[in-house]
Length: 251
Image (cartoon, rainbow, N blue to C red):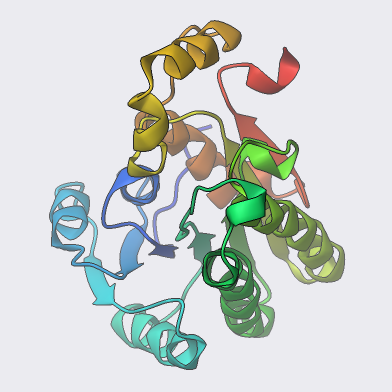
């Protein structure tokens, strides 16, 4: 069983992993034995340092993933650092909060651009490499708002519904070629994205009361699911969206 979940000899490119859930995922993969490339807008040295403590190789790439002209170069740099990419985790994303009637065109396009367009384009780049090798794992980060409407986040909700659709579309095309495409849908997590919500004590309490587990999630809670989806243990799982939500969606 330990071999089934081992990532020894694998390399993972994780986007948006300088902190938060992305960092947690990168460190979980490193703990399972994968070498790590962290691609983020900001410096990833803390992620690199912690990953290396598990005895793996780790590197950081600073790149604006919203600038699509830089995606191929970033992937090529990751390949140069590692020799091959076995796992891609599309974690990088942003959220802009305002009522739908006030949601600016710029906010809409910024969110869709990074959260959805970048996921499509980087997955496309990675898949070309993985198809040549005959294997690979792509893990997208969805959300509870891949299933629900949310409040004051129309762009984010649309983008995460789109990522859910892409996950299934990619799986339909690539499952037969040895590439598993699945997603994790985190519930309410204590990250920078949810800081504005957590500042509202009344709303925070109402959300916590609705979570059967009785607490918000942390980056530690996504490590195991990420390792599962990146490992041989999930080789017959395709197009699945794994809710890591403390039971939110079952309520």
